[in-house]
Length: 247
Image 1: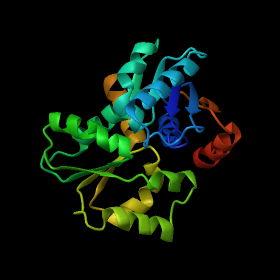
Image 2: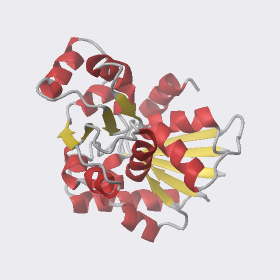
Image 3: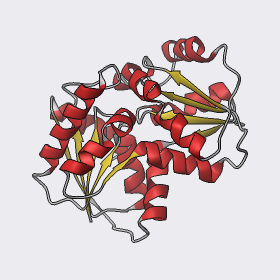
Image 4: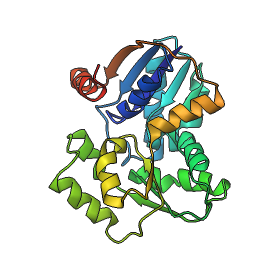
């Protein structure tokens, strides 16, 4: 089994980490559009165009599946990507909704969704969760967290000030959906900020759960092959992947 993983930058490596931990694929081809990150500030038509170009890139490989490890693209361009691809294209939004429905049993639970401006403006999570009968939903765009992760500022005063800037006036949620694949790298700090009572929904773990539920992905492949590509400075991406994934 060979999978392509697409993200606007480096955040999708958190999804790759989950795939590696569960050994779901023989080979993983990662493509980060690092020349044009972030996607979360761009308009819908631009996001769709970039997503279709990613499909064209993946046509250089014989893939069994493509995972869109970008919430913004998953929210806006999944249908168009499936129309252009010759294999199934799976997005993290649907996976995150499934993970939330499976783990949060109280339909009145206070659920907070954080993500880029584009992801939050799409209301993709809210619309899908409402179909699952969740009613107490709140969404907050947190775009400053993306460049902090890109700069590997994962703790300290700058991050703490940013968290207070976004969340100081919000009621503590029972569940926090990390609606950007950069955000799992901030899991420790977010958990400390909100407290252990807040359940964090992680895109990488959600994708694994989705694949196991929808496709019966339970076979394990030891020592999967990894290939990393980027639209700009691929060596920087490979260096970060080596650090984050310990490969």
